[in-house]
Image (cartoon, rainbow, N blue to C red; front, side, top):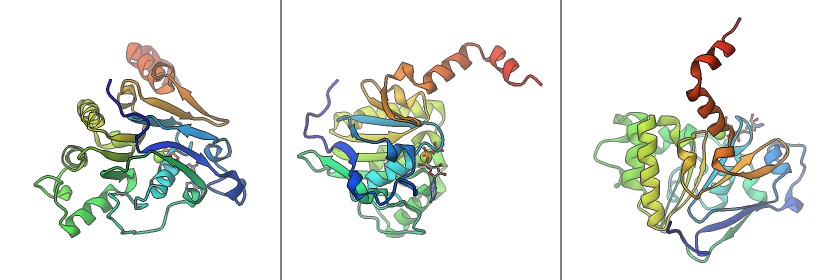
Length: 243
Ligand SMILES: Nc1ncnc2c1ncn2[C@@H]1O[C@H](COP(=O)(O)OP(=O)(O)OP(=O)(O)O)[C@@H](O)[C@H]1O
Ligand SMILES: [Mg+2]
């Protein structure tokens, strides 16, 4: 598969431990911060996976802010904020950048896509399809964004993009991801989707209680649990629902 060489946009993310005021306070108390040394980012696609509350969104948001994105999501040109809910993790984050700068970029924060859509309407930004994003369903709007606004040669940080998408659309997103990767794009994606994280060759980092581990797709809990359930859903349900 064609990917970029060392000239991809973000090479590595880490924490400058000397700058951390206290590992007892949020967000530094999270295991993801306490245990982070460095994460080597894949030239094409890096996934962050792990349990609810493991710190994926906190880390992705800090990478986004340190890369110059607005904390609430959007492209680098968006400067709006409805509330300052982001943590200060970006202040201690170290980013190793490649030689090239991305020509496009987007930070999709799962919770604030509505704000992004509002801002796009206000600015009358072009490149998001013909219909207002507010007049499209959540999934339609997201696919419009991926198909029409993501232009390639970009850095795209996506938090649970699957939240809006049917399984069929998740597969369509995989195909779009591949097109954009071939057009020199780099993705960092926090996800729970066993479909999305199957993207061939991607690096998958699992945020666990005591460490951040690089894992193979078939070793993820998402793959194992989904497979077990689909192969044997009646027995598993009988076991789960026994009173
Ligand atoms: N402002 C805050 N103050 C204290 N703790 C917070 C704050 N914001 C988030 N947390 C905690 O930080 C932890 C990590 O949250 P985060 O949203 O990064 O998890 P996540 O891995 O993205 O989870 P999910 O899979 O549910 O999206 C959670 O336990 C959350 O309760
Ligand atoms: Mg999250």
